[in-house]
Image (cartoon, rainbow, N blue to C red):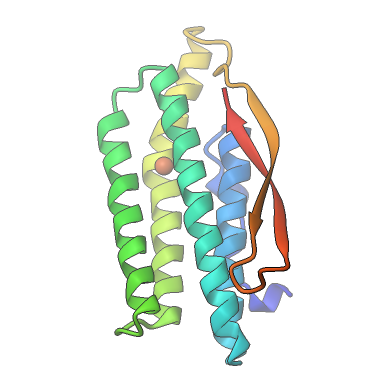
Length: 175
Ligand SMILES: [Fe+2]
């Protein structure tokens, strides 16, 4: 289904931290899912789009939480501005989702392009700075590794469209 992808992971996107890279790959995956639901043009794609947006918002929150935890652990000086970028993005996305729900001016395809551009720029500039800082700390021996214990937990929630269905997914919790 490579033809249906709006963005493909490339090794140059790596920030040098496997945990963060894996999460970025998932964000790219979700962006592609949203894109696919846009170009299908079926009535059902609207439902899929809404469901994927919800999943994306959840995942973005979890991912930003991971990055912020890492930055806190190493006393990263760029934390306040990095965090602000995250907060502003979440605000914008939630605003867009509201517009969509209320049937206001909302173009799914423009939203997907905005999402893709933001994610790629944020990874290439802001996350890269964070990654370089961590790699430099490792090089100079300031830290051996960023100590983060990531625990997998099973998350279940009722399906919004089908009350008889329960969705189960694996989430990761940072300790
Ligand atoms: Fe970030």
